[in-house]
Length: 137
Image (tube, rainbow, N blue to C red):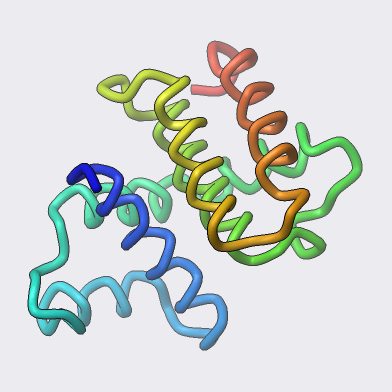
């Protein structure tokens, strides 16, 4: 697994865990940096992703709700929400990652971790975000 792929998965796990356990994301991130739960330290790109999502939390949620065509964030599986937030940040605010890569990585994450319908939904929503990103940043 490529380094950024692992970092994305770890970012998704942090966002998912914080939501599931009703924890502050920033505090959970700080805890994971200070005391990793695995033998490997948290990848630097994971920190960048989570901090990026936190910095644009409201904007990301608004974008996802606006372009999800009738789906409220609360109705989406929590894994999908986490993957969508990470990928939306990469598409809109991280110029280093090509949009198709961010979309593909998010689809891959939900393929193994969410519902059968999730890959198609995530792909479609993120493609729309990519199409309109010039109006968002």
